[in-house]
Image (cartoon, rainbow, N blue to C red):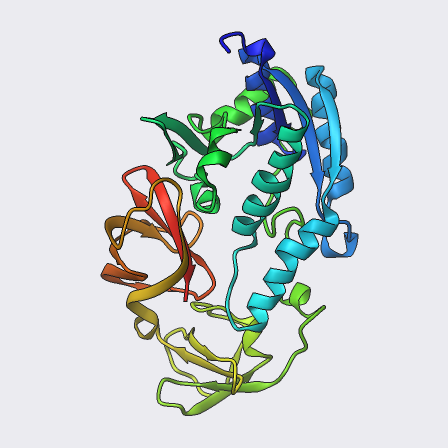
Length: 347
């Protein structure tokens, strides 16, 4: 297929500048591009800006002179992403909805729809890269270290990567804004989306309180001494510094270092008390071939977090140096150089 005009690409248009520039770049390359907006939330009370975002996406498509479609995934998003989000918090863990959203929605339902409609590829505004190397599709970090989104994509598989284009993988954010200005996109200066995938910036505690009741519990130190109280362990994450109340002044800042869901106790301590030298992961997923029981790599334990030197051995991640803020429920993503090889969920 050397003639790109015969290659059909469904571009996920979010209403933001990244996806707009992605669509523009693909059209400039000669692909047959269609813009697609995915609606996954509808509750304005949560700060959802779906109506405005859809209007922005439609305006981008009109500006580019490409067809525009809108898909409704509200039911599936609630069932496959948000239910899991609540279940994990109830269990005392801190999930990452963006990771699941990419697997279930953008590269799940959207990709399935696109294939059924005769598209060759889907494309998004993610800052990441896909390359084919000796018959294997590899996921690489985006070259803009401040925007790289490979962390959120570690659950993708070979079939999904083979049908995915990331036009922004080799571009930095400043350049994306410049292109948007030059092209005349109305959303060139639109702020980056933050918060929960497809919902936006929300107060996580308030969002959780719609389904999870507050329950007063004890704040204890590492020796088990009660030193304060809190509103329910499920509202806190490992490494958190605020939101609980202590009755004693400790001088240095206190952080959440542990949680006991059964007794509703929140364990706090100093930063050094929250350091871990190793941790377990489950639900391990390799993007390409199975890399076996051991691997020397770097690991990220949060989006855009530091890359820590580590060794993976049969579900255990051994860190070269003690690290603060290892939160159960979050994803640990493994890298070899700039190559994202897979990851798992921190236990």
